[in-house]
Amino acid sequence: MFTIKKMMLIASTTILLIGCGGNEKTGSTLADKKAALEKIKAEHATITEKMNLLEAEIAKLDTANTNLSAAKLVGLTAITVQPFAHYIDLQGSITADNVSYVAPRMGPGQVKAIYVKKGDQVKKGQLLLKLDDAVMKQSVYASQKALETLKTQLSFAKDIYQRQGNLWKEGIGTEVQYISAKNNVISLEKQLDASEEQIKVAEEQLKSSNIYADVTGVVDDLNVRVGEIFNGFAGVSPQIKLVSTAGLKVITQIPENYAGKIKVGSKVIIRFPDLNKTITGTVATTSRTINVNNRSFDAEVNIGYDPAIRPNQLAELKFEDYEVAEAIAISVNTVQTDEKGKYVYIAVQEGNRMVARKKNITVGEMYGQLIEVKSGLFKNDALITDGYQNIYDGQVVMVLKK
Image (tube, helix red, strand yellow):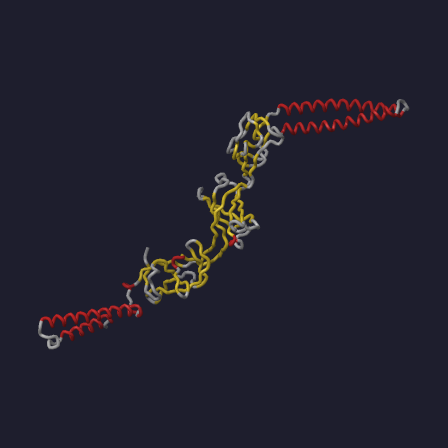
């Protein structure tokens, strides 16, 4: 059976032979013969060009005659159903949930001993340093002695009051003596109460010479030495700063157009590029007002304490604003566009051949290199992911073996 190409080749040869037949039409001179030859060559070139064009068009339309040698090499990826999520990428910084600046409760004092150093882990109530307490000890001692004296006087006054009362009952003595003894007891009792309170004040002042940590955390700053006066600050710098380890948080500013997507409870993936570390969390709080200068609002994400994470450190945040448990997501590079919309090519087995088929699709969200396909593709479809750029619907394809 003759192919189209062979039939056209015979037709071309016939025309050439007809053109060459009979010297009476070409003349007998050398010039005439050369002119006739050039004419025939031009006609042959035109016919050859038309033949090649028809052959290409027929090969495209008549896929039944296409052989494997003309098949397009492609790479395939089976469509799978998988979770898909879209994220909003922002940057934030770390801050401590509680930073404590230690100061003396009863005023400045000279440092006598320091029990911690910068970078130490401390617990709430742990002794940090000791201030000079000599005067305070003397005050406590004097108050205690005064209290003992008052107790002795009160005991004597009560005895007199009791005796005077007994005499008064027997009609001995005067009423003035009895009332005076009673008032003396009452006055001493009040003085005793005041003296006891004075001792408490003196003891509290003595305790204030011990400087304790008011939070559990890390000694972030320690700018005081033995012999110096401790008053909490040296100029504008804290002498002792504690960073709480009870919790750290990430603060970021979110553009106003995401106000409806990011809310309390939204999932967040936090990456620390300097540490090559990634953790997860949820939005703890969001501000209710929009910053008029940059049209954004603040969001905070609480994170657990990690000694490697430091306040003011930068963090990369990915806020999840869309999630599908079972979705079809493909490489965005495989999606093409025409006047009808988005489409991809899949490979379909038709008889003993595998051909490319154009599939119109509806897409959803896109994140990174993946785009969600809402319709047009199904699980286990063979998506053409390599060689899809220069193929057409119905073209025979051959799987590229990797």
